Length: 299
Image 1 (spheres, rainbow, N blue to C red):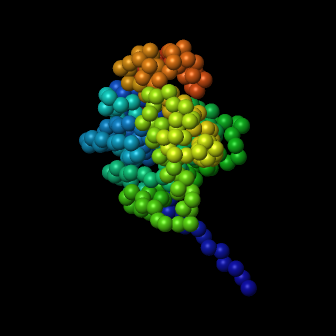
Image 2: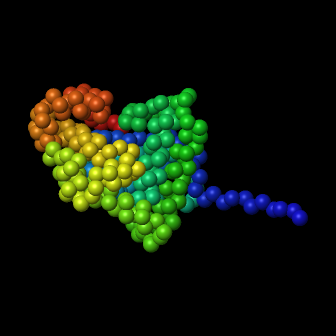
Image 3: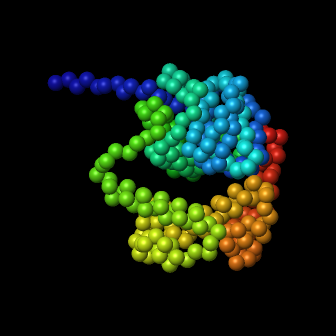
């Protein structure tokens, strides 16, 4: 008996990855534009932007992405109000199937978002180059990168493209499955996270969170640690710092006003917490973003 192997068809193949970025821009950021011979996508993780592709202006909001084909001139700008967070990746892919992505604004689902997050995570391990460097022309390999980190970057990108192609860019709809418990936990986490976001200005305690969400302390902490890697109050503190960073980038409030808005006892405690989470003081962070935004409008 002679076995006959099957050659695997690979309609989507990434030949090379050029850059992987995660940017936190100021609300008045503007990129003057460029064109190049590889594909690039822009995904809005938070806020809103306006992308120019050739002669078209495309407004994008949170959860949406657009692809730029090789040779297409493109630029982007923030809307002057909200400080956006963006994932931008560029790569070589010669697959004819990539024609699907031309001139489309796509809304991604949870699966694609998870793949994108994994791609960014692995890129941070695979390369020494900072993911927020707008002047980066070549990623520098990390000699101590985990095994096959670069390959996982490409695999996640390919998988994400395949998922988008399979559903034709339409929003995903979940089907009933045996994972009801996991869905229930995810819905619970989403509900509590939304509650924390809605109460970002309050000085909440763990007891407050449990009471207002009708949940026991041990279950709350258990599920939060499983889903986020930390406790509920730790997550709440990180939310406050994310909001503080956004307000700093928008530039419409001073540090004292931000501290008060977020419910800190004092600006000194706010500064200590900010540095603990980010590794920088609020002043240092404000300066770094300001420098980033003023680099001649270049990304």
